Length: 286
Ligand SMILES: [Fe+2]
Image 1 (cartoon, rainbow, N blue to C red):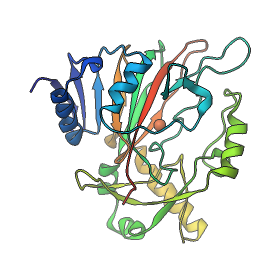
Image 2 (image 1 turned 120 degrees about the vertical axis):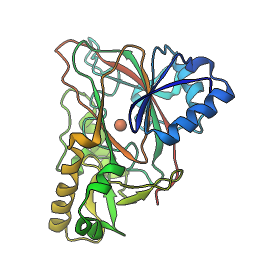
Image 3 (image 1 turned 45 degrees about the horizontal axis):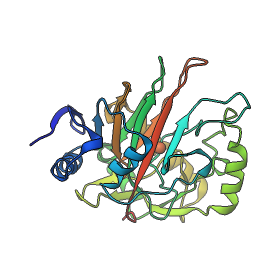
């Protein structure tokens, strides 16, 4: 074993003394093994350029192309900028409201994401944490009667916040309303199994989110919304959560196939947070 792994809890680990910009094949295999046992891996002290972040990410498989082309990094089409910074002319530097509701990345697409890699470029003095919820633990905690109600059902997932009564469109992001109006017309809903099987470990998890799951296919909507509310309550239970408090130069990779996550925000006025993100493409959920 050439990499040093510190377990933070049963499903989160940090990796110390590792240079993501110079990862050998052996090191990659060790990271992939660690990623089978953990749903979140935090690499400390990484300072990759956008091109290096892209190259590091691609060693784990093909990447998704960011759907919001406005905020792709000029040095790499693979890298999306997430930031609350607004230029003097009023335009945003990156996606301002990224991750502001519990979700699993790209569950609104027919082929959802496998994993997300997020690199801290500029850490705020206060706030900006990321919360993760282990949806395997959530599924295990559900009463059998609730499991029976969702078994075999499919959630309806959509990217547009305008179709989701649980979400509001950020007024901080100048283009957000246009983006979600266009998305509501051009990005059809997709169906995802409410109970998902992890393609590598075979473990089942609850695969819904307040951000993207807007209905349950074939279920009366009043009944479906009440059931979704009941399920979403579990995500808020801290027993199932891990809070990542970012340090400068952290790079975190997480498994979207069994987690929900959320950006907590709460930045001080004028304090800037900037992250670079790549997304590893996944497989159809089953
Ligand atoms: Fe996300």
